[in-house]
Image (cartoon, rainbow, N blue to C red; front, side, top):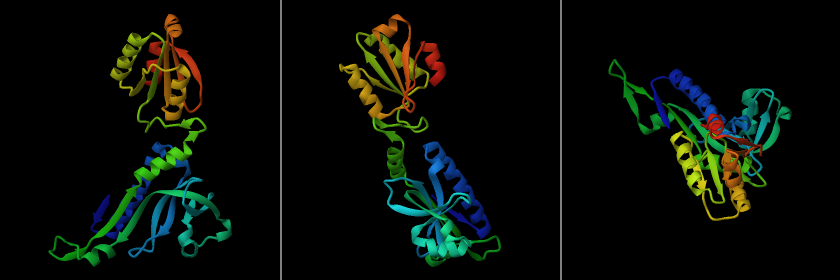
Length: 251
């Protein structure tokens, strides 16, 4: 995303709003608590840019973090940034991170070099102020996979899971399981339906590997009790619910 502004003040205000909006995005992605707005190189156009760096052992960057002041600095600009911010380098903690987004406040330098201006109400040419903003979609996805997983597989946050429910049918319950699938769909619940002729253990293992937020299991034994087995992926907690209780919990 790019934004164009008539004044430096307008760009600065929009830039700060975008930072806050991006923080909310990372919160919804499930990695907001460990993603930091980080001082980084501004390249040829500005002294500093800002990166969104997420703590991750598989990352390729090192940032220096002041947790108390919520200040993060990319290793590549540590000397300049420390001097600019007036902080003690000894107070900073080096941490391995992965860059999942970046934003640039270019001021008017980039548009001036391009010869890109606007005409004001008095008919005079004026400089444009420009900002550039980007979230690394595939990089963020890789970090989510690295951080939000366990020894069994992925653990998708509800907000971004490709499906909300992994539906498992066991035994001769195809007709009822089909009905449940349709009921969940009509209730607005996205479902990955495992109706394979496969052992229950294999289905459960695949459910954990794929890591959807909830697993719902239907079997002949459960049907006899008018119950469904409901399992939460990130905690492993399991309970037996009626259909109405299930819908109330996840729809």
